[in-house]
Length: 212
Ligand SMILES: Nc1ncnc2c1ncn2[C@@H]1O[C@H](COP(=O)(O)OP(=O)(O)O)[C@@H](O)[C@H]1O
Ligand SMILES: [Mg+2]
Image: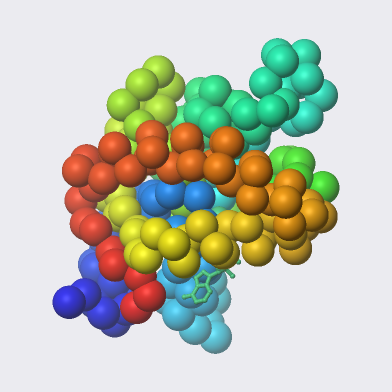
């Protein structure tokens, strides 16, 4: 059984390769990717100068206005509701400009507004490890392929399915949906996305069973 310390060691050794390392954490909606990436980065950095940074794929959600224009607001969270090419380009920049002079800014995701937020995540030149996390890092279609190609390793997190669905409903409720609406959204939309993500599991370098 993998432990959290095993993951810390593996992440540290990735970063010892010389340049900047890029680690991906994939998994279905609600699997615990963001929580795991945050914990990894916090533990790696300790109290010293930060050398690891978390960059969310969620920062590349298209804005609601654009989803309306595309007629895709009702499937927000599906692969085509993200700017995958923009994400791949940012990952390339994060590698190529690792020893540059400028801070590279990644977008964040504002959960209250459910909108991306430009310039929210600074990645300064000294950062040796980027931990990026999201649903579709291992997708083998379109620009998502360039995302995988930009990463050194991708880990896939999974855990108990009914617990994942329960937490996902709870998160939708926390950010403004009523219970019925949250359940309906999960069953209609999130679960379709989860099936796409689950099919990418075999492409991962490591499968992480949560909780750790
Ligand atoms: N180990 C854990 N124990 C308890 N709750 C957790 C754990 N990991 C994640 N959660 C909760 O489950 C929900 C989904 O986790 P999150 O990390 O946001 O998933 P993802 O980023 O994969 O969608 C969140 O509300 C989070 O607080
Ligand atoms: Mg997340």
